Image (cartoon, rainbow, N blue to C red):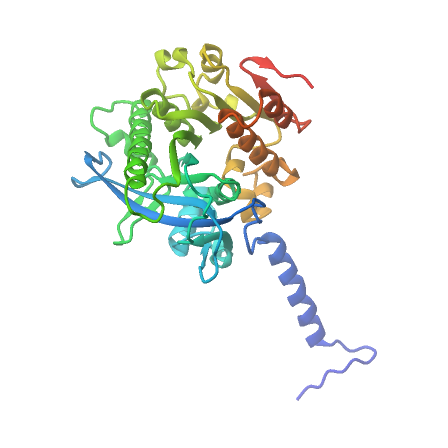
Amino acid sequence: MIVLSRTRGTVDIGLIIGVLAIAALGILSYLFPTAKIPDPGGEYEVGLQVVELNDETRFDPFSDVEMTRRLVIDIWYPADETEGKRRSPWFRSHRLFVNSLADNYDLPPVLFQFLRSVKTNSFINAVPSEDAKNLPVVILSPGTPAIVPLYFSFAEYLASRGFVVIGVEHPYGAAVVEFSDGTQFHFDRERVMDLPGVETFEEGVRLSMQLMAEDLSFVIDWLARLNRSDHELAGIFDTSRLVAFGHSGGGGAVYFASINDPRIKALLSFDPALFAMSDEEIERGVEIPSLIMETDEWKYREESGRISDMIQSSSVPPFHIRIPEAKHPDFAMLDHLSPLARYLGFTGSFMKDGGEGYLYRAIYSFMQYVFENHSREELRSTLLQREDVRVFEGLNEILR
């Protein structure tokens, strides 16, 4: 037996192993720091219900077999009492979502294994707050092929401040959507070419976005029916105060939805993909209040479409924030996954430098402005809080 002692000229192997273990833990805690999504900071606790819907009036053109259009929606709302309720995990089906993230970002699944332990600030099936009556609604369409859980922080921020946020999981638009019966729908970029009558990729994307826009209108219909029922959430939704919010492909979908659904009173978009919109639709512009948040890199990508032309044609000039130090995936919480996201070039420096809080404050102030709780001057003041962004109303830059 070999005995190692702490004497001159000897090496304590146990000490070295301990130091290496501490170093390894330190590295892992740096690379995968999120144990809990940051507190949203609002007045209310946050409740979360996940609901499966089936639109029997529409067949799903993406399906290999004849079936009606099915959806999963995530509903965040203000709550008071959360005792005895379980915190929602960040990802409901850990392995399924981890493999989906890894496939779509071309990274090894092991990098996302820590997500299993990440908790959110949302309590599953919490009782709605006594104040939760006729609240404004934000309906969220995520980027393609992002997934609704990547917008958890945004949803909790608003719900803790008295809004209802509804994330729509679009089958074949999201990286993966899973139903309680085990049915799964996976994103496939080329699948749009299989849609009826499609000859070009742009035509397929356009039909896909229109399908997603119809999903949003169906959810609004469902909310109106729910309000008249005896459901626990009945009465919390004010569908006369409804904002549609979308990122990337979801940003395109909300613009399509606003054209045909007058119940949508305002638009929010992160890097909206407008390339599938027709010249006529672009030249029609936007006829309701809107806030566009755009990274500098997005304006050079084909998917962005004719954003400036649409802004110029709008009868209600959109507020427009241009963000030079952000990247397109920043809006989907990738900075919460790991600092690796930035070092691998997926994200910019903006979100880690207080940018996430700025964007949430800007969105909150915009919605308060839409619903006449903030003045135009208050909104403009909030939008100008960062020196490293440029802010426009229509095509006119708002100067500091």
